[in-house]
Image 1 (cartoon, rainbow, N blue to C red):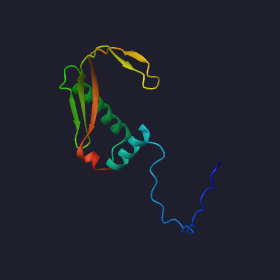
Image 2: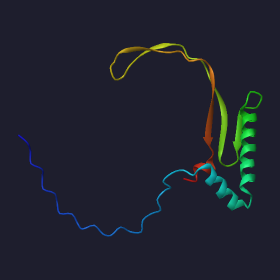
Image 3: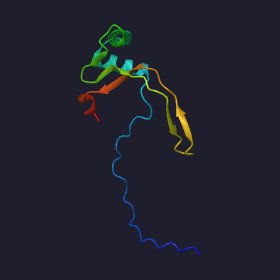
Length: 125
């Protein structure tokens, strides 16, 4: 036998919403929009801003590459570092959905890039 729903208490009429808070941007800025905003704030040409990003990209590549120290810091924003992941052996496990035994493949040793936000970047949110 089905139960009847309990009657709800009368709700107070809703007041008009206060001033709406600023909504976050619907989509992230494109590369061109970023270059334009930086060019406006710094007084540089968009081509110069693009050249700065290109130079930074080359610098990051040399710093985290084979001959570099494996660490690059963008001051007060983030730290990019190379982390060595050791090889893992093949092992047995189970599929949590079906409880079926499975074999998890071995993985070779590898290097991965880890990006860590610095305190100043964390404080922005």
